[in-house]
Image (cartoon, rainbow, N blue to C red; front, side, top):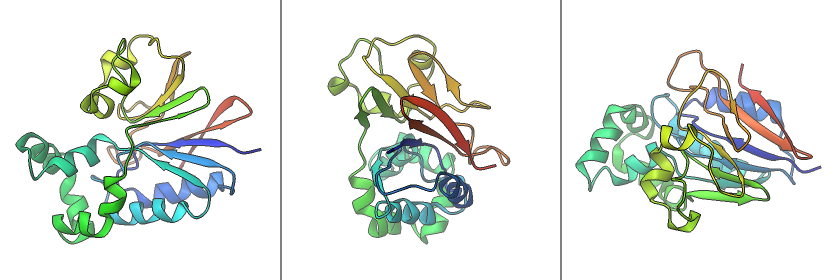
Length: 209
């Protein structure tokens, strides 16, 4: 039976990504939705992106944009996002690529093709969340990668269970209408990377520890 898998907020932690993928052992008919924040903080952002691209040859993969990719891609044209990039781990990303310019030279096609959300059956995947009361197609880009408490502290009215990351918790946060799977990977030294695995309509979790 094909599985639907969500992974978010890897933050350059290549070894933790590999540990999760090894445990999941993706099969050809599985689909993995990667939900952004592949870069920054950890030391191996470039290796993480290479791994994600290679996984596209193993199973179906969908790649969403996170707040860190969003900041990186706007850093040269917007002082605010330039500040966010460099002050939240961008130096580690630049080091892994050799220079800031190399990021887009090497993986520009990957970054330019990142999506903001993905719908699969009754599930809706996004990096950070949505602003309630606004149709999905009219959502603000910044909200989808940066929103926090306005989204996760109250029930939403969208006809999907929303899988998201961005806001870290000690363990996955499971609510009736949403699941957050960011468990602090890359932000805290011993924090695991967590994946949600959806199979036969039920959700379970796999982490890198």
